[in-house]
Amino acid sequence: VYDLFKNKQGQIIIGTVHKSERNGISVKLGDVYAFLPYSLSIPGEKFAVGYTIRALLKDVLLEPQGDNQLILD
Picture 1 (tube, rainbow, N blue to C red):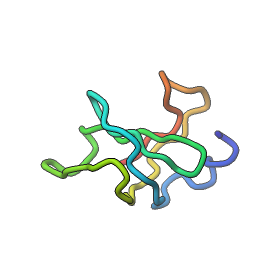
Picture 2: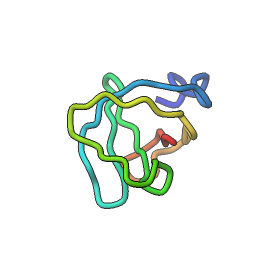
Picture 3: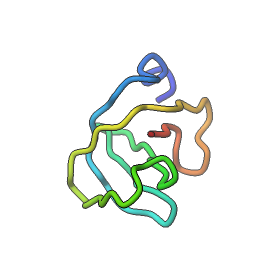
């Protein structure tokens, strides 16, 4: 995952909302999942499962932190 997405850091990527979690949104990018924390999303924005989302790939972590290795903004 790191090698696949490291060169895309700082770019806008397109994914699908997979599920809403307590502190953010899980976004599916093909076969990989990324995480969009509520603190980095637009206040009041609603996310529905299955909707397409465009976000900035903010961080690509070398090792997964929890279940997430890709952080969106």
